[in-house]
Length: 342
Ligand code: F6P
Image (cartoon, rainbow, N blue to C red; front, side):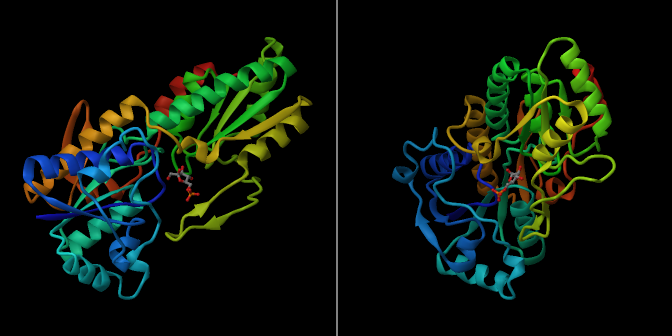
């Protein structure tokens, strides 16, 4: 048995731990051979491979990023994408594929398996934690830790200058990072994409915080939008999957807060620092377990499935289930956290 492995979409701390888990168990327990495909779906599309064996995965557990490289290449955007993938899998004598990725990468795996019979097993990853069918994705815990540390640090500088500090975190469609890091970091306002915010209300919360002699911290997810839709999208672009990429909500908020409250405001955009560097212990643990279970699914011939965390168990679910709908923040949970606003 020869197994191909690829990592697609935005990178995420823990990807290397999955690769290591898959390869270590596959070689040691089942005697499988592996081939790594470079840069997500670009690898099988163009036949770009890399050696993947025990020496190749040695020492990678604590390393961020992915030794296989990643991209957002979508094989369905190219006319002969499926034909080329099939040809390259045959050329490299690959019997099964383990695709590690988010909504887009797994969506491709679901189609390749469902419509074209290519044996795929999926492993969910995203720092955004917005994949359905799994309680958590690895990478999320690391990202929340980084964002929380940043908020902790921003509190002291905000207080020294009695300024408003706006922290923009990742999350185009879901506010999980904003919610968790905002709560953990003691933010005074948390704004998420799931619920349009009222700028007057935000300014009222900010003002009330100053009245209590505190400098407020506003955590905003990059996909959050004001109610009246007056957000100026400085850099609205579309990615290869047609998703609108927003930027600028943090800056926009600081400008509006300053103008409306008369308080000085600054913005910190955390950006890719949330995705870089070594994974947390929890993410290494979860990613390793996902890897071990993914290679078991290959051994069982259980294709079209994705490994997922349910409670403390790792289970298998149809890949299509994970990509059908994004997992967004429940309004009741947001309301619960709202007790700290203002
Ligand atoms: O999907 C993960 C994610 O980190 C999003 O939160 C963010 O909007 C996006 O990736 C950024 O992607 P890129 O690195 O391609 O700009």
